[in-house]
Length: 183
Length: 129
Image 1 (cartoon, each protein chain N blue to C red):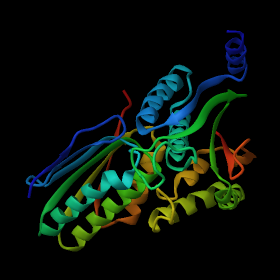
Image 2 (image 1 turned 135 degrees about the vertical axis):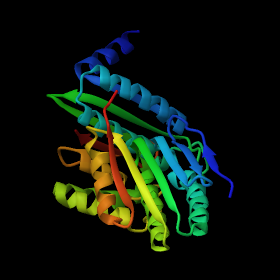
Image 3 (image 1 turned 120 degrees about the vertical axis):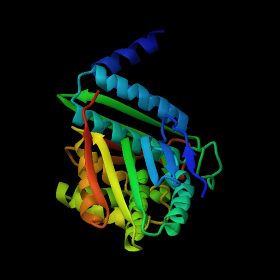
Image 4 (image 1 turned 45 degrees about the horizontal axis):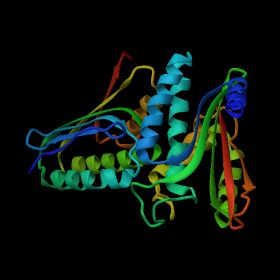
């Protein structure tokens, strides 16, 4: 009881609007999308911000379905997947923070770091141009979407995306990938 | 050619391709888990239909409240198919429905308009409920 009480208290202090940890499936994401929409409508966020938050939320949640290294479904399955991770939406000084975390194989971290570093160094105009170019290009290898997910989130963020990789205790070949967008 | 109808789900749109009447519509939400899998067959059927068209005016309604990044890519493929149909001598009228204040979807429509001048593009803003 007490533990949950302090968990709840921290959530209130951090102005958490939505938090989930567990397995992600498309049905879970659709249900969360409903909850997030309702929650954002009720909290008086403007229409434009709401749409950006919703869009980035879906991109992050679907990244977990596609790429989390903690998977209940076989790695070669590309539909009806079930994978583990966490998402959180919170408010801080009039801005909205969108964060997600999931384990990944340590060897893919370097590639992710390069992509995200290069995104961080781009201006909004450059991000928009890269988005347009990617839309017209063939999908990159290993991508289950269109290689547009991070660009979509970056385009809707008011600050550069933040990320880090943390060691995962007891799993030497894995790290936890954290991504944060400010909207 | 048999018409194509797919009912909407919470995360995928209603697809209603009435090939006999040359009326095609896609409406609703679009963030399926695997957009390539969802749209793959739809685009295949669309291309077969378009290839059979000769000097036809095709009316298209697209009204999506939200589409995720991988759906965006698929929409782009759909517009390329329409462009090919126009190049082959047909006319495609695309009604682009979106909420009036939804800048992202409005702007995407404007980009499509610039990218595919062959398609007769009609912006159709609607007031939010």
